[in-house]
Image (cartoon, helix red, strand yellow):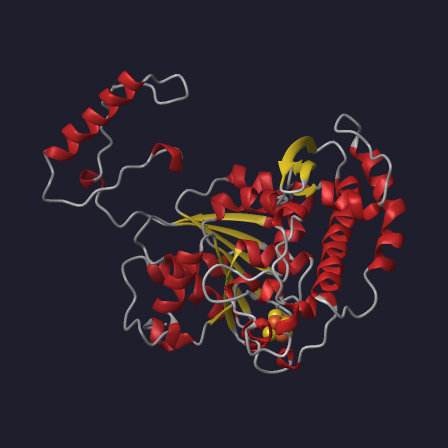
Amino acid sequence: MNSPRDLGFSQFPKWRDGQWAAVQAAIDSDTRFTGLVLPTGSGKTLIALSWAALLGGRTVYVTSTKGLQEQVVHDHEDSGIQDIRGRASYLCDALGPRGALSDFAERLDSRQSDLAVCAPRRGDGAGCDQGPCYAGVKCDLRADGCGYFDALRAAQSATFVITNYAYWLRSGQYGEGLGPVDNLILDEAHAAPDELANALEFTITAADRELFCEVSTPGEGDPLADWADWASGLIRRTRQQAVGRPRTAQEAHRVLRVKSALLKLESLVRAALAGPDGWIIDSVETRSGRGTRFSPIIVAPSLETLAQGVKNVLLLSATLSDKTAALLGIPRKEWTKVEGPSTFPIERRPVIYIPTIRVDHRATPADLALWVGRIDQIIGQRLDRKGIVHTVSYARH
Ligand code: SF4
């Protein structure tokens, strides 16, 4: 392959050092899951999309942030890549002031509910996540004219689709889905176990309990199996509450609350089946009062929630390890890791250790002042250059 243009990526007239070799190495993998470890600045996105183009079929590219999603769309718009994101990112025109369902746009007291359904958003209107169509209200825009459903249809028929982990995981579990997919690219794949854990976590709120009309629920100390039994007993009754066509905002809101609660009951049953010991059950504060949160500590049993049966999966990262594959539950015989060389000469990337303080929760204000002073000292000698200060969390920025 002489250049990326031969694969349809017309914005890229030639391969950069190491790119074609990385594409070939990934293509040569004969396992379902391939980890491609490449340094920052090597053009990972082009390498991954070229891998997919050579394999053929439909590809979904999953990023960890909407910023990265936008960057990939911008850099590869000539390839016809179709962007899809969560319903909240699109305006629900039916709920707008002149919309056919504007009667459903009613402000609801957020203290009474954990769902902001049908409530106008800050700024210019309600999002499609608040669309009454999800409660069973007929909306003519769904077939043509709804920002979300138009984007979804375009994505379902596109060869290349880009989305974020939250949407991919949610649409696979509960949503409309993106149609058959042949190749899946997981960007920033070192974070995939956390993304999966976040998607699996759910909270039974006080408002949910109200809907179930239950006098008592299991307690936080009870095993997941007890919660799953409790949920199984409620699922049928709760389903019956979600039928019918709502006529008012309040009715639509109630149906959506019931549907949301139903998903949590089904998640409880699934969680118990997948591995009853791999969950933390704790009490948390929610808008409607105390709730019970279920958080997975082991995500391996839920690998297919992430991989969704796709036959070729490429995990892309600068810092991917075999441990990530193990955490995700990828069987050893289905895993190949390919590492590309850094394009920066080794003599130009020394690691220099300057003992200063230990930065953790025990650090005092004086320690932190010393730490910031040391950073200033280093930066002060290099004001003519750009640099990056890596911290362990946003709180320490
Ligand atoms: S289809 Fe649903 S989300 Fe889209 S405009 Fe209609 S009500 Fe809103």
